[in-house]
Image 1 (cartoon, rainbow, N blue to C red):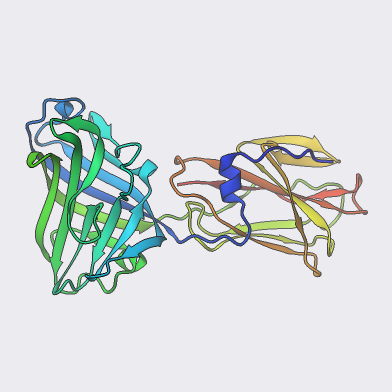
Image 2: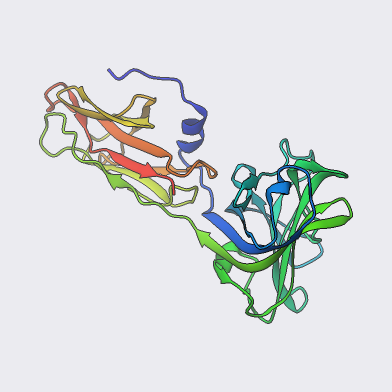
Length: 320
């Protein structure tokens, strides 16, 4: 028998049948430092002319509409937020102020302009607090851009996927504020809004001594999107299949076959259908470090197998 291990937080969030999240979307904003008069660390390492990059992740299903204006705020994944310069990188204030939420706000036809705001307010560009403190409390990062015409077609984040530059731009502001002052200014250059996707890689057969092994396939977005599906075919109808999950691949001998994932999690027991198949919805939490690996494999009881257990092929998913 496979031994059952305690579920770490990662797996508990990731392997919840029936739970769906929206697509994971990454926003990346590029600019050039125009001026800086901050002498406190870490902003004292920033000089005019240097490149600046602001990036963060969003869940396309995690949003709040303004009750008064045609704006919608998508909740920023706080762990993914980074304001980066060549010599330093700055995160959001942590813990984030109680009662406040960092949003990426979309404006559509408000009333005749479109645009984007990074703010804790759904309507006004009040900015978001950063980890370092200035003379008037935590520095604030303030960013907004305004476009004329029909740059956006709706308040749906997925409709906003694309690249943005000066085309149609009428107003921009990108600054690091210290109270009422704006001691660091950045010229906006471009912005991209992209859906992150990552396919599953088949790591080969781990046949448990039976012809016609269970076939394991995975589809969907590993970075947090909906539509992830882990599918198992060719198992015995009504059997309890065990899904084993590991953060590394060890390829250990098991029951006449090869158990590929390290035994970090598993088995998670899931009954097969009357047709001997499993289709398991799968949600991957956003904000995981790039390159995080998940190795998965099914172990299925099978009387025809050498040791009574057939092992499927293994899958590897790596977050982008």
